[in-house]
Image 1: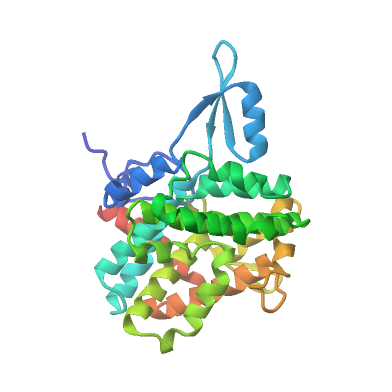
Image 2: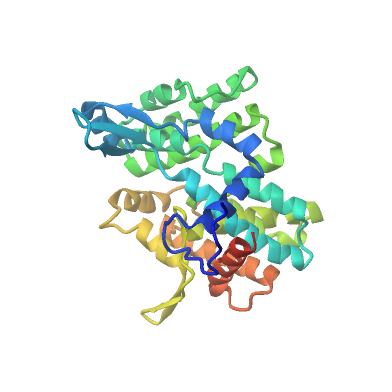
Length: 351
């Protein structure tokens, strides 16, 4: 029996709304033959029963650990993160923004499909990232790199073994740094580089691999260059820049699988999801580990003006947002999250 459509969708809550579930399932189904085997083999979909002792260790390593009550000796299940929900819900926003840009003639439906697939893969290396970053926070040296890269989920193929060995050597100094922040950023970067090799080995096309890289604060320098040089690019390069920009922005505005569409006033400034999410992520009280990243970024070679990670992410995020708003015909760029949310809701109701 098909659930009746209510005409109301709430993107602010995580619920079991059958309308949302059906639409999100359709977004995954489009690329399931490619995406699901990768999610499984990369360790994203693994729920593992563990002991209380192991649960304590895994929690310290950065995994999400949940107790299962009403068992003889309370058991635990480990699940690494919410990457799947984030990628599926984020693809809904990707499609919503991209469809407006298609209507204005800058992209084709095929471009939207490729970009949406890239969004479903951009966090496929989250398990690898968690282990490298959290390991680097707690340990100086390349021992953590050797242990993580020996994991059975890190399959890059014989064709990429030389490049993998080269990456380990290239990152050695950064993992040997006395700075926790420098080591953690190295963990993010190495996870991204290794995941490219895994995706290539899994048969993902080069363009999709390039697009999926443009997420999170470490991608801000490259996406900023792409946006700044847009008018000097070939038509094909411009399409790729737009695909990258949509992915970067969607990743910026989503907190797990939730999108905040509101614009708020604070200290005389208008803030939207880019600001509120970044402020929360780098809050020195609530997230002191990310505050260390913020400070370490100031001396990173990619930080050309001494910005911290938070300031850079907000500044570049709004530049990308304005770029996309212009292409989508949205006059007030700060309302782009609201425009995207309305389009997602309509797509859900029309599904």
